[in-house]
Image 1 (spheres, rainbow, N blue to C red):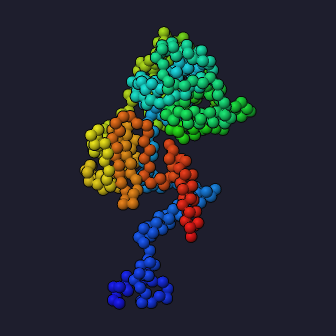
Image 2: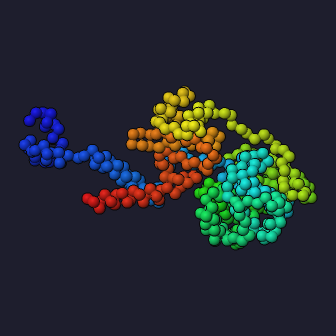
Image 3: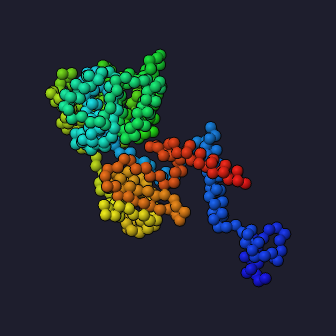
Length: 424
């Protein structure tokens, strides 16, 4: 038998076999390409399973490198109301009886109907308003005074609820399961949902209560706006007037401080601070007939990002006529010709995918395929809910801040490994 034939059959020969074996037997003992590919995939699953086991160790600290961070595109979190409310835990504080409840009712109505508020774009969604200091008749009269009979089915009211950590958490979770398009929950007031105890006003207690609301907001990518009161004592920093300790403001993602120079005045100011927005002061004036707050002016002009030539070039690849574009990262870089290498371009789009969706109405995906990475651009005909784009899932996440996918992945890996072990 020639050298070529021996080389071809050597891999298939068992230990101690001679060169006289039939070609048919050697073919039977060879490993099909599909089986070898399957073994490679199973090895990857087993490696992922071992990683999950390491993550289960209490000493394990989950980290991401800067490279991994840029290789992941997170779920878009558009503001609920631009320049005012973003997803997260927010406080609205002010003295009693200065119009806070009318203000949050106005916010609730605009978000539930999608109408712009004070010239700011609103992202429509279902709203839950816990008016825990009112009854339904007072709410009816208030909403009629403000908006007449122009009602909306997307605004829900409740006048009684559990306490945070004692029933309320489950109630809110259940409401959002029934209304998955919820994007704003208003709690009026904080005192109605907190347990009264000896440590009720400690820094730790204040931080904990806002922390639980923040955890809920981050998990579901919504805004939880909680109404609270201010103290009578003046302070150098206006936000130090918020009743309680600095734990409230320290944990909150943003705060709105409502003030009047005179209780009977129709004018009021709202100081706005937040992690995801510029500091701002709004000057409002109340309509005495409807009790609706109208914007007189803003202290500073809202920041507007300049046009992005990279996103503009990418957005031109899809349209109402051509709603999808797919290709490799290299093909994308060659097509848009923006002077960026493929790797740099995909990292840039990972970071900017939220803006690409919100401003240019283009959904972006970058996923691993057997043939390599594939980029998919989708033209969104109508305003869509936040579009999740995760390139490789190395943070084990599917939530707003990267949560909840680990369990699903673990179950899938355990099942695959168990199936293989059972067949051997």
